[in-house]
Length: 421
Image (tube, rainbow, N blue to C red; front, side, top):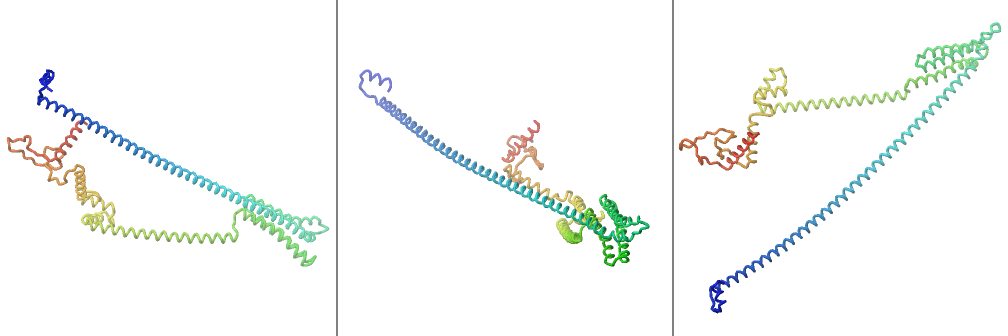
């Protein structure tokens, strides 16, 4: 409402001004529109806040569900790990129990073996002691049986001292056999002691046989002669067994078993040698075939190098093309080791160029690039003809492709960084 209309209203001028009314109506309409816009904005803001709150609630719900799932997975993982640990502990306990049982069983078997060995050793010692006592008793009984005939043979009222001769013969044999036992115990030669004991025993047996036949009967003569030999003989058998045991000599059965085992071992070694010889022959044959195939492949794939290698091997006195000869021939012909050549290097460079172009997202065909001669880092020199206008290049004469501009920027940055370094 303008000032004129207001004054007219205040001055009780009841005439209506259409312009004022239109302005008032416009004001009311604008106020209503503003109020409606404010309402709509408020409703939109409230709706947005409501949507945002709903989204936040949904997001919180999803987070809660995610956290719940994570907690459940963590709980399941913990339970699984706990179950695995318990299983490992149970397995370790079972292994420990089995190990302890195995150790106990091994200890029990070892103790039983030791007891069996001790029992066997005790039995052997008891048998040895019993055998020694019986041999000694038998020797004494034989001496008692043989002595009367010998005493009768040497009895002479005019020379009573000759009665000591039988005691000398029987006692001498016993003394010499004890000497043989001492020699066995001290690891000295004992054969001569035993020979003298047998000589004395046969002398006593001869005296008993001669005098028994003359003074008594043949049975007495033969019996006393046998007693003179049997006593020292049984004792010598005892000593002979002790000597064999000391020296570790084998019995006939043990010798046969050892010989059989030796024959089996010899057959096994012969079979093993035959197998190794067959494997060696097969390996040599396979190596020869592989070398022949390699030579054929080299001759087919590298004929020039192969011909030069053959000449080089003949010049060096080699019967075949060795690896050293082949490497030298390849370097002579190709100028590089066998794994390199000019063609391989060109292929590698082309592949590297393709990879580099793919990384920089530029075309591989270099003919599509417009690289000026002033751009550093170009691999091939280009001839640049400046514009004929005034004999020098001006701004806008050269048009660069996007790839050329990127390459120029990269080269410039590298140059600046190198100067700073």
